Length: 77
Image 1 (tube, rainbow, N blue to C red):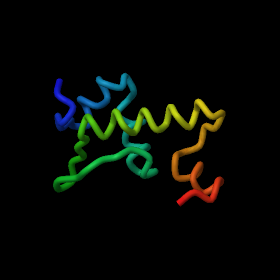
Image 2 (image 1 turned 60 degrees about the vertical axis):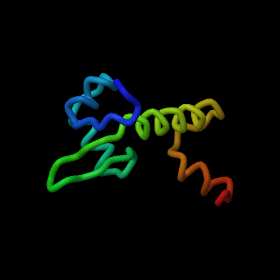
Image 3 (image 1 turned 30 degrees about the vertical axis):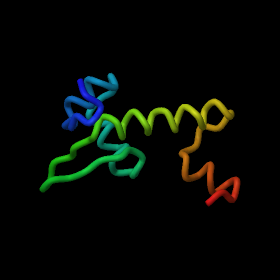
């Protein structure tokens, strides 16, 4: 799998080992990077990897909030 590979929601579900409904919730909450074509969702693998790494960095600092919430709490722009 290449980093620039485009994944559909089912492929992302298999890659991350989470349910499609959980991915849809992340989409609706605007928590995960995605693109739409018509009414279908697509994900670029390298963007997903970066998103996971950013989420991990936040957890390493003892926070379980999103990156945007972390920045807001610290007045970082």
